[in-house]
Amino acid sequence: MSNQVLALTTTAGGINNYRIFNAANHLIGAPNYDVFSPLSYQREIQEDKSIAERFLEESVKTKISVGALILAYLANEQGPYDTIWTNDFQENSVIYALHQQEKHGTTLIADVDDHFETVPAGNVAADSWISTRPKRIYRELLESADRPTASTPFLADLYGAALCPNFVEPDKWGGEVSPNRQPGGKWADDIVILCAAGAGRGADFLGIEWALRKAIELPNVKIAFVGWVPDWAETYPVGKKVAFCKWTDLALYPQMMAWAKPDIMISPMEHHDFNLAKSNLKWLEAGMLGACFVGEKWGEYERTVEHGRTGVLCDGPDQWKEVLPEICMNRDLREAIARRGADAVNRDWTWPAVKDAWTKGVLGDEHSGNRIIRGPDEQFESATAG
Image 1: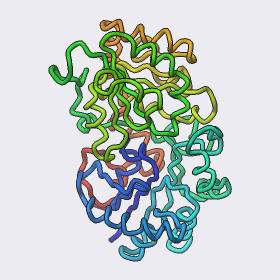
Image 2 (image 1 turned 135 degrees about the vertical axis):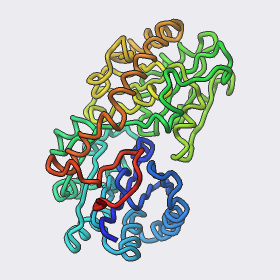
Image 3 (image 1 turned 45 degrees about the vertical axis):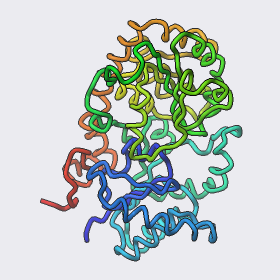
Image 4 (image 1 turned 90 degrees about the vertical axis):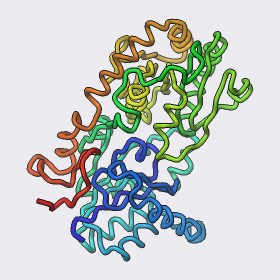
């Protein structure tokens, strides 16, 4: 089959933000071994999931990444891919992708979504990233790719990559609603703060521990943790003051976030280069959830969030201790900010708003009509279809 496109990711963000999968015939998520197609929902999920699980044991034995084993298997079964679109920078997967590029003329698109070379030593993911993504391999993939892409201007400038901005799909989050909470879904007087992050963001949240402790002592304030949970949070009564969801199927991520029915969504950041590369995804998710966004005055948040109108930005832990309780106590303010934030996200950060940038970024101006770039609401079809 011509124009076979494979997309491979190693990050949760790559899947739940629906970023690199819009053009793929075959969709693989690793190391979570789940796949999700925003185009046709459950298409090929059981087949692909069984492929990933089949290679997990072999990966443990051989120390070859699951991604590389999957790439080899699919190329053998399906024939060479015309395009491999990947953000799997593990050494074995990179070597295989480069081999396919050299042997079969496969177009290689490398999507970089982190500044791996500056991961802080205290980050729990640091050892894993450093051991599985040697700098020479990381650089080799980016330099050899036919088209490197990135989701933020910082990363695009740093690596000479094409900018393919983040976007969200309102229908995956329950429709274009502002706010997105329904009456009766929680106790009327509850004020819910949503903290959604992986373990790699733990240091950012530990920096505002005392702001969260101050807020949680207010009447009716609860904190919902999705993903990483700090030890101190587990000392509070579950249900009354805290709620936890430490893991969820990636395809159900939007529903899980909506389950919390947050009034406030937060995203603190330490001020260092690694976080300059982080995207504004949590602000986009807040817009889909109808929540007031409170984030750090740093990186993409400082560039895209209008302080006091579409979100609230704090400059360091001391400001968080003052601002977060104030937002909790001022319903009119947080709901007004939530509405304006949702309007901005729906207007500027959905597929129609970013389609031109994606087409230009991946294919260049001369290919603006090529069907390899398809929106989430469009039917899956061959890139050569007339």
